[in-house]
Image (cartoon, rainbow, N blue to C red; front, side, top):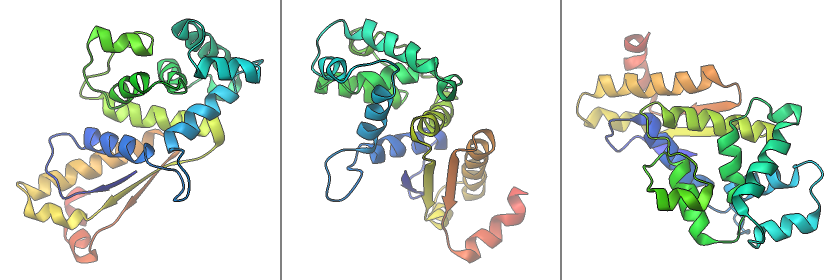
Length: 212
């Protein structure tokens, strides 16, 4: 995920999550059309124990009870050691992303961004309860990192760029501390999160002592 610190926000965890989901929705390679989320959801479905290729295609095309099937496939995945500590509801929603239906995809993306959702929207993704608590964006990023590690061993990488632009915003020192606190919390609580910070050296040196 790539994000520039040029925008003022009251929640940097939510800002990072929104940018991460937007970047995961972009093509994984310049010459391809599959997105990062496509690769992740496909990897999950393909790792479900004892799931035949024809069952995978039937699920993608909308045959059967999608909610019941997604629940069953998620439970099967969690029977594997690498998925046992992963967020079960996140796995279910990512499996729903494999359905070839833009209506499902739009609701899944709303859920992944921790947006409030109407009950009619939640039905498209198995009635998954929206996560709208202030701490949920941070939890979502960490949960995605855990699922990525279990699915293929890939780290979740966040590039935080242009930190020096925060000097032009209201309460720049306070905002800088909030950004660093949000980044530190992510990296400390999940070893699969890699954060790269980029800014002018003079700016960082000036604030280094202030953040301890």
